Image 1 (cartoon, rainbow, N blue to C red):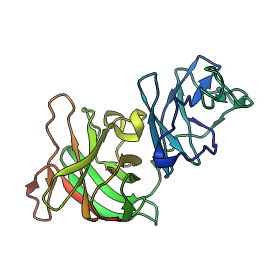
Image 2 (image 1 turned 180 degrees about the vertical axis):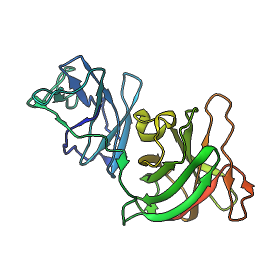
Image 3 (image 1 turned 90 degrees about the vertical axis):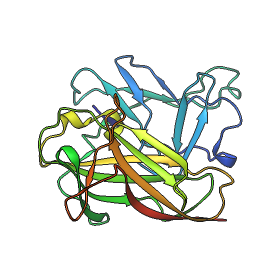
Image 4 (image 1 turned 135 degrees about the vertical axis):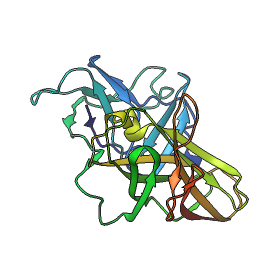
Length: 251
């Protein structure tokens, strides 16, 4: 189940807090935080807890729990600020009750803002379109792609999506691998005919040379690593990656 809260966070120089930074403190232990996503201007940091946290200037916080939501209740969220400034303790703002947002990964149609496609993957999966956060960017900045999938049949396997940020020689400078909808909606739960909005983000490496790069996309079975084939216009299977977009990295 998905709950959300929007907040503005300080934009740190170079995208990294200078001290350990605690993001959330949940008072209601029936819930847990799924640390993703949805809007751009992402910043990342590794805290002393050893996990990577993702920050947004306008953030959408995803939480999950086992039981069905009730209209009058919700998770209670406290935003926690810089630990060092708080003397090593959480410095929360006022507690807030989160609102039910619904299944944000389901769409009735591909939005008009998306680039339409009809790319046939093996196992009855079609890529119906995509949106890129930016077709040009600078080094050390995030790059996000929202993919719009459709399943033609019920799937037995849980596939992982990958994005590769490559140069003209095919060298992979950055990549992201993840389950669709931030693990909330794996492929074996997809229903035929649904449109699934699936965002994936990667970080363009700092000090990357300016130039033309490509964003490649594919799916694979996580246990074996075997990629799904992609059918070409002649119905011949292609290697398990397609070029999604050209990206220009500027100085």
